[in-house]
Length: 222
Image 1: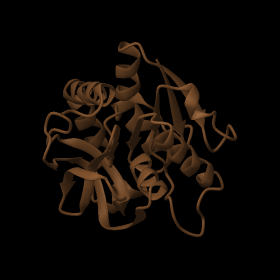
Image 2: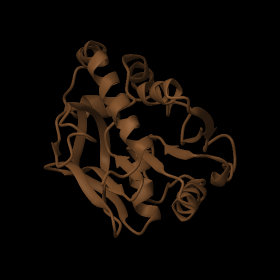
Image 3: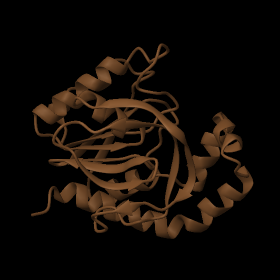
Image 4: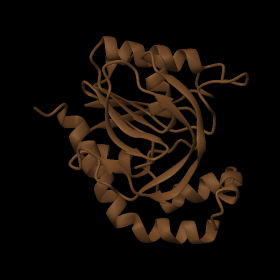
């Protein structure tokens, strides 16, 4: 199997999720949307991953490649290639399929639990979050998990989208903090403590990410 990994930014790293895919015999093929031009045709792949980004799907300063990302998702859905969307990936999937990405009422940053209707797919966590956007679901999508501020996971046929970051490792978080730690301060969090907690949680978060990948690869459950 091959996975097309659409990375909006060079720091859109796959972490625990990429590790789980490789362990299950799925070869990731990375494409950085902001650097590598038009993405490959999705019909050459078995699954598509759309990773997180430091940008929003909407707004005056929307990235110039966003239409290609939206088109790739629509092609994947039309051609029955399962999509796993993570954070920005969940937002852009919703937008591509007729929903709407928009600003959230507040930042959600740090390790947080979710209310879940399918703990075998998305247990309550905690999961690592870092977003200030949310979305309205497209028609045909089913909410799987949420917090008081909005949807945190949803499915649509074989497609699974999560607003949190199952891929996050301490190494990835350190790279994100080096790039821009403004949201961490605005959320009232200490970056040193957040890194230490992320490192401490890695065994459990690696296991949860692997379970999520397993369910995604298995497809919809009866």
